[in-house]
Amino acid sequence: MATNPKSIEGIYKHGKVELLETPDVDEARVIVTFVPEGSVDLAARGIDEAAAVNLRVRLATFAEDWERPEMGAYDAL
Image 1 (tube, one colour):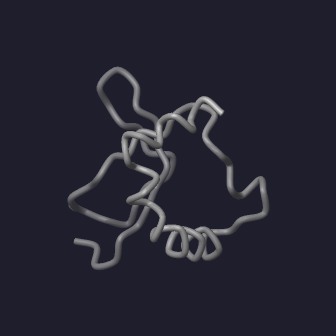
Image 2 (cartoon, rainbow, N blue to C red; image 1 turned 90 degrees about the horizontal axis):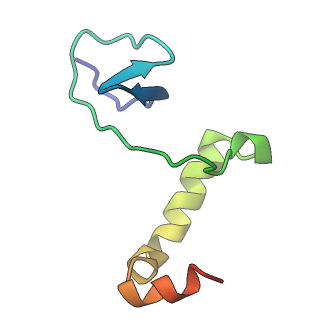
Image 3 (cartoon, rainbow, N blue to C red; image 1 turned 30 degrees about the vertical axis):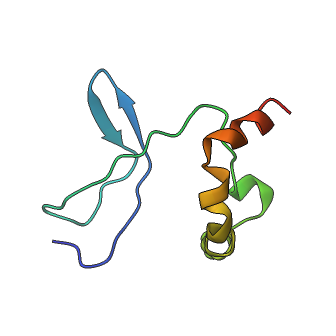
């Protein structure tokens, strides 16, 4: 079983997940996150994995406020 988390992109279709690469793991628990079409391609914007992690950590302090129901009013803007 893998000791470090590893993310692998895949495609969900007809009830199955097709991984785009083969992990070096025999058995492991997984978490599947559905990414909506049109999501931001960070790599295309010059943001590598390390920069994305750094950005996520710095923005995490705002997450609680962003997720508040009343903040939905800003989605239309």
